[in-house]
Image (tube, each protein chain N blue to C red):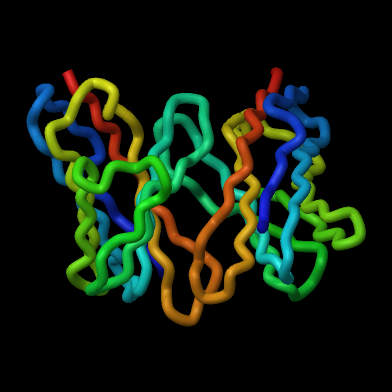
Length: 116
Length: 114
């Protein structure tokens, strides 16, 4: 149980376009979801925390207008990278917290974004 | 405030020899501690977790870790390394009950030599 999926697994886009990444909890309700960014050979950096039906809480230094997060249901959160540029190329990973499994996050497989 | 320190950025071992990946934490409250493994271009896989039950935690693939409060440590061990263990390992602390927020270590890259 506690499976999280991400779609797409890989995306290549042109500079200036927007890209949407979906994160779904497949067999549980995710009251809280997290979005991370990971640069090559580095640890995960938390970008934002979202609770269903509420606005996301962004970490310091993360541009809210560039990385739009929506958590419209208990099983789906989306990250939209707006007006993407090459420096936005990265590995994006989502995770979810399940009610009753306090303090544990369940991770998606990640999305590799390449901006040309 | 909580924090976690992985003492080695790289560890190399020969196949069949023991593995030790070190992790120290700092927490104001009773922490939950996790070890995750990440293979190249993959997501994170949970190896094991400590959530205030037994201090010696057994995980998947023969890994285990011991929670030592007096030393604020949660080192990951395996008796015999396998080539497939080569990956990045992250130690994580979470001690804000109900918020699920994780603090990640910087990671340890394990290399297994044939």
